[in-house]
Image 1: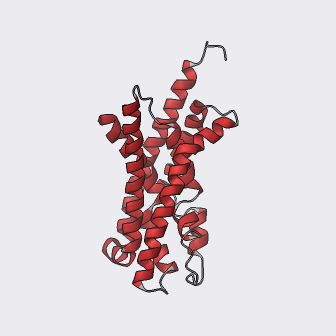
Image 2 (image 1 turned 90 degrees about the vertical axis):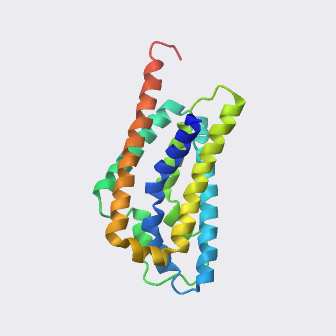
Image 3 (image 1 turned 90 degrees about the horizontal axis):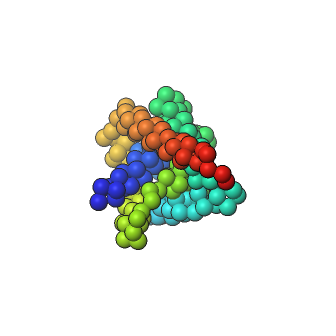
Length: 221
C-alpha cells in the first residue's frame, strides 16, 4: 500500500508544478472571457479530459518509444531527471513564464473560436514540459513482483493523473473566483513550493538512473 501511495504522490507532485493549473487559470479566463459561464464550464471539462489522455499516453508509451530508438531506461531516467531538476530550478528562480505560456499570454484578443484542444489543452495546460515530465515519470515506475502489485501501482499512477485533471477542471471552472481569493502573491508562493518539490523529484529520478548505470559496470553488454 505504501508503494501505491508513493506512486500517486510521485505522479501528482511531479506534474502539478509544470501543468500549473493555478497559474494557467487566469490565462484560461482571459481566453474565454467573451463567453458565458456555461461555455467556460464545458471548455474546462474538455481541457481536463484532453490533458488526462495526453499525459496518460506520455506515461505509458513515452519511454517505450525512446527505447525503440535504442535509448535504455536508465539513460532516460538520468537525462529526464536532469531535465526535471533544471525545470524545477527555473520555475523556482525565474519570474518569466515558460515559452508556450508566454506566447499565449501575449494574445491581444480573447479566442473567438471554441476549440478545447488548441491552445487551451496544448500548449497552455499540457505543453512540452509536462509531456517530458510524464515520460520521465513513466520510465521511473517501480518493479512489481506480482501481477496484482503491478495493477495496484498502475491504478495509483492513473489516480494521480485523474487528480491532476480534476485540479485543472476545478481551477479553470472557478478561475474567476480563484483569482480573487489567492491573488498574484498567493499563486506565486504555491508555484515556488511546488517547483522545489519538482527539483527534489528530478534529483531522485536522476540518481536512480545513475545507480542503474553503475550496476551495469563490469557486465558485458
